Image (cartoon, rainbow, N blue to C red):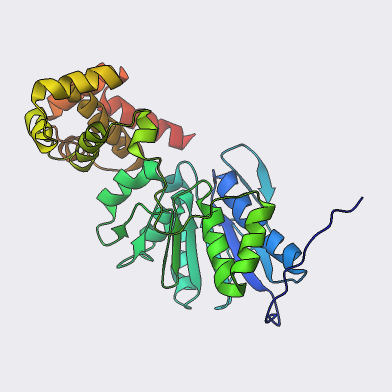
Length: 334
């Protein structure tokens, strides 16, 4: 039995499909890519029109492998595009290594034509490395926020699900591709079609560019305590210049001892220990994702000396920052 499908009627139908050119980088996120393509496919199906077409390009023009180990055959090499095309770069793990000189050169050349360029998941890094986000607002997967902020001062980094700034688009990974594509479909053909696509995906909560990609602090820590959440928020916002526990306590109207008991009760660690773990997590992100020296990483994470940083890092991760950097370099060379 064929399912009953309600076709969305459009006020106007384009003369030819709007073409999307997807450029999946090596190790790209399968989820980000497939979510974006499926939105276009469903839009065509629900309108009973060829509103969108798509093509897969990549360096070498042969095939590319996702972070899940699934290999895709490409439609072509990094070829010349039309000004009417929308180009979406798809990133994933080790985006720095996947962002080659040839990719950057091609991106810059094609962007000069004025076409719309987007970066899905970690591909915001690729766009920024090409200089395409200078003076623009952008977002990236939350795990890459620290390294991105350190490396690209000329980009206004936000914590939004997705950002559209002129003819530049970026997403924060995961299901953010769906939110971006639904926004594009709504802009092109109306909210009714976008909602119909969301229904087909069983996507019940369409998010805007004002939403955050990370879970709220209470959801993340599994505790709904306003003062605890406020203190953690202050900690996360002050990594380079840590705030003393006494000042944190004063900011939320508590004594230092009360704050200590609060952390022990809900997080089974002291405020000082929790703060240190936040700083070390940022340090690890910077070591793994940037070329910053170990000394500069230490300073960016609030450590006054490399020796103290190394001691704390070893105690938490059972390795030194220098070995961590070396092991990352070894993985990228494989």
